[in-house]
Image (tube, rainbow, N blue to C red):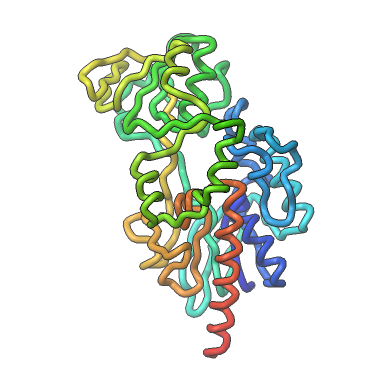
Amino acid sequence: MDVIVIGAGQAGLAIAWHLAQRQVRFVVLDAGPQVGHVWRSRWDSLTLFTPAEYDALPGMPFPAPAGTYPTKDQVADYLQAYAASFELPVRLNTRVTRLRRAGDLFAVATSTGTLLARQVVVATGLAPHIPAVGAALDDAVMQVHSAQYRNSHDLPDGPVLVVGAGNSGLQIAEELAATRPVTVAVGTRPLMLPQRLLGRDLFWWFTRLGLMDKPADSRIARRVRARGELVIGTSWRRLRGRGITVRPRVVDAHERTIRFADGTALEVGTVVWATGFRSDYSWIDAPPAVVDGRVVHRRGVTDVPGLYFLGLPWQHTRGSALLGFVKDDAAWLADQLTADRATALAGT
């Protein structure tokens, strides 16, 4: 096998398309039962904040009207149709348990056996993160990460504390506020922008101004990253208008009580942790590509010849981890893989 791609999400499928165009022998491995499983498993009312015209992978437009905001099931359907349309070689129900060097090759141990390849693209690796403070809460408190949340009917009656003020946390908070009291705990206050400006979607402006193409180390990108996650389509005024109480960062917990950075406390029965995802590359044994759990790379290329990453937040630009923008990194990385392979073959 020339290339193994780990992960059949948007990043894995995007580079799979480019590898297929280059007639590279490859396979895509995914732990899920179907392509798009991760998207289909998100909360019921999830919609993208990017309109459909900005959500396409290479070679296939997103099948929804321009100016509409696809649901998570529409995204899952699109990814399934994408893999099927281009007959991409995806092996499902195949969990990767270890990745290591094996001479000049890579050995990829999976739940169904071990595969060997000259090059590997890791297009997965994020796991839901719940802060350690959650362990101090009583077992009677229901705790759920936003990745497991489906809808308000899954939660007990009564008030809910949502920890985290990114796009996921605030979308969930607004949904819950329609039926119950909601408090949102906010660490660093995110930069909030409306969905539309002067009659145009925000991403129309971002692309016209070149903001989606700014490298991660550019001055403007550093300023955006310092503000944390960019929240689109809501505001503090709107949240308060829906009866949502805003509290500062969670600093401590004991039994059923959460304490905040301003010294106040709240007794809780249900907590939704919208605290994002953290990388989990404990299964990768290929130093120096991963050091202390962190990927060391230059635009997805590591110092381990033949090992690459794709879909990382800010891998190269703001769009590196977004559905309709990862294709730019995928095209560049596919060229890099091809060039590296040619160089390696020339040296043998």
